[in-house]
Image (cartoon, rainbow, N blue to C red; front, side, top):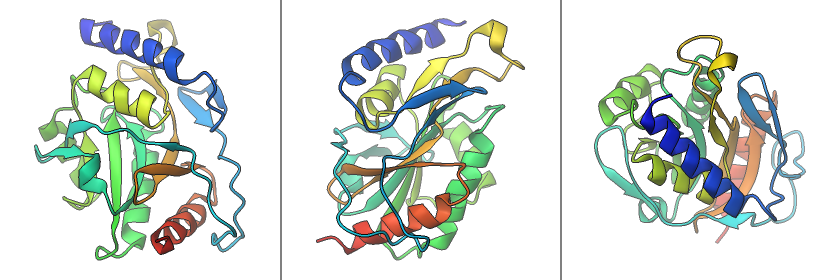
Length: 225
């Protein structure tokens, strides 16, 4: 394990101790190189429209990270937009490619004129520099200015991923790695954030109804004043 990974692990564990206590947004079940999380209990009809007001799960704090084009992105840049966030790393040997493919499906399903953004954090910031993330984003036809692949220091990533979005990321023990790129255990959920920077839904990225649920939640949040 290199020094960057050790520092990220220390930051993550420390952040988890401070943030996980009392948070009942989702429960985590570890397995298969990923960290799974149950949806947040939001009941949606089959058309994804649902009923009633979505609960406010938590507020996402301000942050300052760098996207794949080298632009600094903070919470203010997403103000007034609904956004959906996840966490991956570019050399992932597990669920990341499928997660990114499904995020790309959501991007394709929503008009570019709609105030909706996509945010993908990296668990591997020492490797995933802006040029690396730019190449990765192009594999999925990510639209610059609309889908941000964010990197920064390990602490900055941990502050937003763990403290801000209540995601999980841990170094994977060497004995449990199936190949040299099997480096992290991380959440596989999508977090949907409203126009005021508040998390309103948590959806499993790999559940069959993900697309319908996510589009339904996004539409409801767009309609809010």
